[in-house]
Length: 198
Image 1 (cartoon, rainbow, N blue to C red):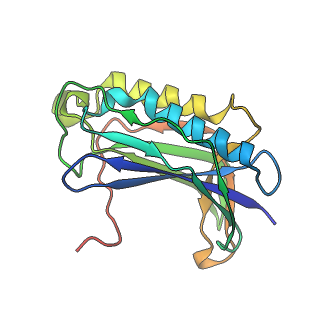
Image 2: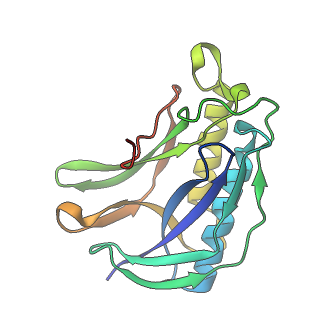
């Protein structure tokens, strides 16, 4: 049985919020222990802190201390851990928040093939500050570099052997997950379409 940890961040930015961002992790200890949860929380917080210049000062990121343990082949909740709380992160950009639908898109690569397709993931980061946008409404080159660099730093160098994964949910068969091997930010802005959109 393979168990992954689910680390969530509450995103507070005013109208249209709050938002929720999720990163799945393979714990360094089989089944997961508190140290794994605390490490993952700290590394997610470091990621947000490293890219805070993409967000206005009204944007706050709070990594939740409640870490769910999910069996990746079935999607069943099998436990829960409580990690060490991390301080809030607040955006540092001078500009105001841009359109709520406009987000930076970090593309996640793995080395796994599932159902004849490469397993990939995406993180939608936003809404971003108007000052994080470059010409033509694209994401500025400095922000692309910042997200790529900070995302790559999260993949290694933690207090435990835990690592972030892309999880293929078991909706059309057996679930599977694999380590994220690279983070690549799209230069254009992206729109996250929720299943609950009307």
